[in-house]
Length: 119
View (tube, rainbow, N blue to C red):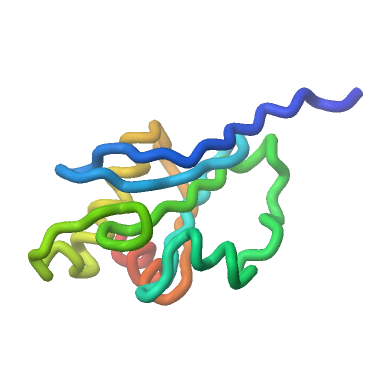
């Protein structure tokens, strides 16, 4: 018997550490957070096909992509200190908390990878 599709498909913002972060999520289950590269954002990744098709079953993995502070649809402050690796990592951890994700696998390209490592 096929399982009912429990897909969450949103593109929205959530306040994280004093500012909004734009994100989208698909699926349900274990958490997976993806961070884009330094000169990218979610929309740019969509045009390049960098991610291709997500290779995860929709009912087993909750996939979250977000625009880092100061990128894409996430505004950012003028203070350059807000973009240090430790600050970007705190943003990612706060985003997971705001979305109710207790544990997750973090991955990313370039800046997104560094953010994941620092988180």
